[in-house]
Length: 119
Length: 111
Image 1 (cartoon, each protein chain N blue to C red):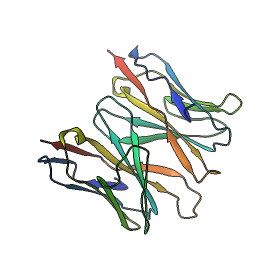
Image 2: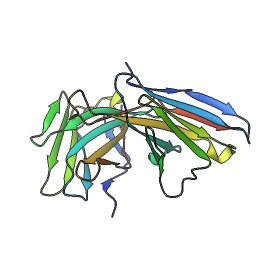
Image 3: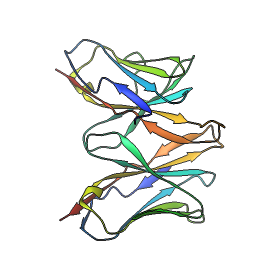
Image 4: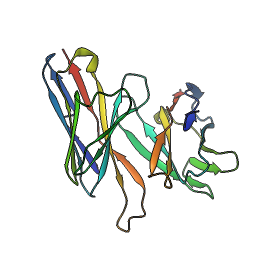
């Protein structure tokens, strides 16, 4: 079963509205989660690193006021696309690293992804 | 220079063929290596880790060449269901555990 769950899997919203996407680690605690965007037939693009209890770190070119990230607990990070526009339509994916029980693991799991369509 | 580079392909191979992908990395201090598989319109999923001694899982073999700084994935007896994009991931535990994705290599297995 999934170890990282993302919700919603698909969302359609009107231009100008905001959309929140949730990413949960189910079997482990994730102090750090990552948000990506992927346009059709293109590679994953890291948008930001979400840090539990502190501010997210954004990649160059990603507007932090438009893509709000909150990582309020060790198992939940949210990405809010504010004032969405059609060009924000994309596949948004989160990931989290599982360090394992002894803290020596290093496996990255992805959420199922969220298809956002802005009309 | 990019941290991780992959040939994007596409690789179009007939069923039953053997195909290999390479992924080069620029930081010699990189420590952990993985191959992920991403199906169309789905999230990437871990295919296999890459160990220093090389490792095999059924038709899939992963190898690490530290001297030349690349990892490889070999798929034998290709199946139609192997059609996907294969991403390599490199983690450098000495620089804040930064991890880097390749852009992915597209594979299509043809009947």
